[in-house]
Length: 430
Ligand code: SDX
Image (cartoon, rainbow, N blue to C red; front, side, top):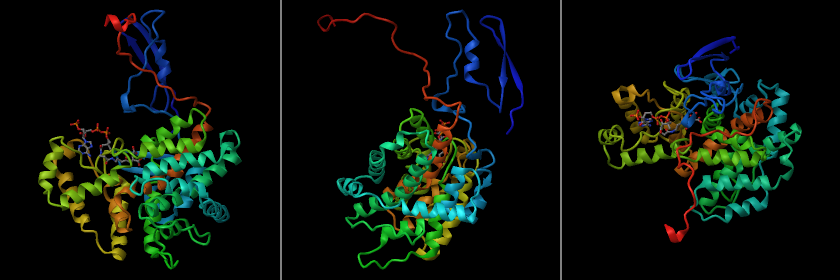
């Protein structure tokens, strides 16, 4: 989108003053409103936008969303084409560098990322120090921060070559950490990554290889996993990416910024929704009828998890692709009966006034859990899968932020609603 020089004429009816405010890319700069005052000592106008419902926090070239038309593009490439034709590591490089790599560039990148998959022993010990039933997202958050402690040099944000090494390190290790969280939860020994295997093949092998070492994942499952990771790779300024950018704006190291993204993704309204969807489907499968459940949702007692989106007011294009991928996976693993319940819920919701009026459609989390479950993962691991997929997007957005001359430490203002000045009262007099 190119900026068209336009302006807004604003009349302040409090003073009769007129102001001309420039418009660029469909926005006005909030700081341009500070000139609108009622007196010289007036701070000037701010914007008030809780949860940033209508605020652009940055300029970004990484991902484009059109929520009304259900469009998602990574560096201009439609998600449908990328999901069908690319690979997760190629998408990671595309998001980071902005263009599709040459064959040689991709091979070198894949080699570097796979070589970065092994994690140090002290991180294995950290994972083993958690109770077996610790939530994997809590462990992943801790392990990511712990990796940062291994790289004090990562504070040098001006050294691009050094930061590229950290980026490769995080993309490589987050998959191993995810697999190790699963192994720990099952009381199984860790399986080291194999440099001769692809990223997704390594991940499935590290999950399921038995102590005899004989495990080769079905190529259709490897492909389905790669597609799922591609679909989760980036999504412009979602809650966790905004957390990565905001924390990163303090110039802390990238590991700490990514740990903040993991924390935000953990929430059930964000990446935690895929786990919540499975629990919701199981509850319905366990006896609560769909009409009963839907009445509860429409009565505001709970939400239809996996439905609705801040940006998409149409079908999430990723949900469409995932729903199709379910069929490919179920060919190998056998059909998950919960798919029928999910499709039933979708059919009812898409025809029900409550959902239609609020433009609530299935989002990326509605069907993804069915595939993860078919791959043998427990619900607690689903958000870890989301984090592994989103890592390249977080890193591409973080990298864009540290090079953006317009950015500085993220520090919003507030509307103060507290007490006026008052004197301290001694305890004896209260
Ligand atoms: C992700 O931002 C991203 O890009 C995120 C993500 C990514 O890739 O990073 O796409 C990943 O987080 C997908 C969303 C996963 N979360 C869920 O599926 C949880 C269920 N969905 C919601 O909680 C909700 O839809 C959100 C959080 C996703 C969006 O919330 P908004 O934009 O703040 O919308 P809202 O809460 O203001 O809801 C508007 C209305 C409300 O009703 P009214 O007050 O107008 O009567 O819609 C209702 C809400 O009650 N509503 C729902 C609903 N979602 C919204 N009602 C029932 N079920 C739902 N799922």
